[in-house]
Image (cartoon, rainbow, N blue to C red; front, side):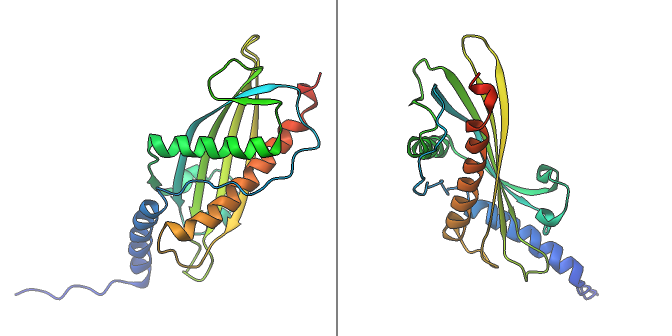
Length: 203
C-alpha cells in the first residue's frame, strides 16, 4: 500500500522556492551586460594613462536577507552562481572603458598598449531576493581594483561598492538590467572617486 506523502511545512516550501528561484534567477541574469549612463567628467583627473583589464565578472544569488546583515562578506552567503562567457566579459570591459572615457579619470585609456598604470578590475554582483517574498530584490556590486606601475611594480588597491533595489519578483534578464546598471555605476563612482582623491597618486 502506498502511503500518502507528507505535506511540506511552510519552511520547506520557502527553502524549495528559494532554491528554484536561485537557479532560475542565476540563469536569467547570465547575459546582462552593464550599460553605462552618462557621467559628468571628474574635477580631479589624474595625470596618467591607464590600461584597463577586467579580470573577473560574476553574478551571484545570496541567501534571502543577506544584504540586511552587518557582515559585509556576501561571498559567504552565496546560493547560486551565473557563469559569464568570455564574449560577455569583453562586452563588460568595453562598457567600463566607455564609462571611464566619459569620466576622464585618466589622460588616455588603452587595452593593449604601454601605459603609466595597469588597472586590473574584479567585479562581483550579488542579488538578494529579500525575506518572505514581500521585499524588493537588492543588488549589490563590488569592484576590487589594483593599480600597478609597470615600471616600478608598485601596486595600490581600492574597493568600490554600489547598491540598488529591484522588483519584488523577477522574471527575466529585463528585470535585472536596470538594477545592475545602477548598482555597478554606483560602485564605479565610489571606486574611481577614491582613486582620484588618493593623494599618494599625485606625489
